[in-house]
Amino acid sequence: MTTASAPGKVILFGEHAVVSGTPALGSAINLRARVIVEDLPGRLEIEACNLMLRGFSLDLTTGRVSSPGVLDAIKYVSAVLKEFHADGLRVKVDSDIPPAAGLGSSAAIVVATMAALNKHMSLGLSREEIASSSYKIEKTVQQGMSSPMDTAVSTFGGYQLVSETVHGIDLPEMHIVVGCTEKEHNTRSEIQKVQSLRSRYPDIVEPIFCAIGAISTRAVPLIRDNRLEELGHLMNFNQGLLEALGVGTRELSELVYAARGAGHSLGAKLTGAGGGGCMIALPSTAGSLSILVALEQARGTAFEVKTGGAGMRLET
Image (cartoon, rainbow, N blue to C red; front, top):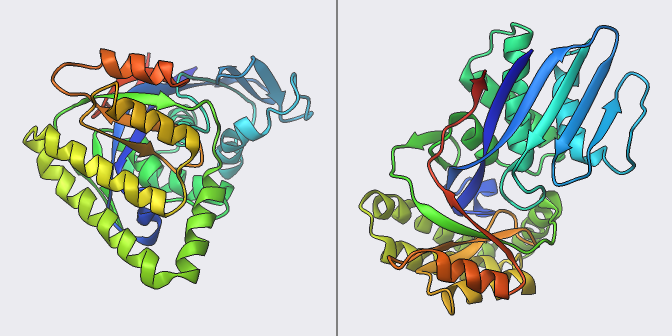
């Protein structure tokens, strides 16, 4: 039996523009997906006990599913197993990362599955090869609409600056507050929407992408030097640009303004593809409590996370 885990992520800056090669800054958070791989001769089965769904199991040999409507939730695990022609295994998935919320749930599951299979099947893949293969699999499942951000963060952890390439940056951890709308989003659909807008209005959208990239680059020294008030301003700038691209929603805006207003946050923005999912807020020196209360009062689900967490790892 082999167990591996990988972290979720927040995109601090750079959503959507990163798909076109503009810099984006992401960070691992202290929410993780865990995958257990064990031998199951003659069968191939996936079990999930905590994906914010009711427990279910899928027998890939017979096609029997214990609950309807779960195939979409496990399509990434299935893709990994098919990629490496895995058979005679049971794969158990357990994740405390909210799905379809912009926190990298699918990437964490792919990376954790890859890491567990790599060990269990003695594939001999390096960490870099796991990141590359995970990105390829996620991109295939999402039909080409993805960036290497999520899988890079889940694999390597810490902070990752992504554009045409991916490289880690040594930055201190931060405490941020996440607010979830409980409205799932569709990453592929939101990316398609923005790319369609770009094709119709390149002279307008390209400068927005450039501005988002400049924000991502400016944010790095601010985090390094703990200049959080300036960092909050950049978060607010980035939110306005994302709204201009049409990926904000009423629910997300209500949480953003609740965090900035009653929550007294230094800055707040959506994280991920938008169209639902989550936002993040940067607490002031007064702490996170007022933000948590404000987000709950605005009908969101709120919790605090730490950035800069560990990447994928094998667990005993």
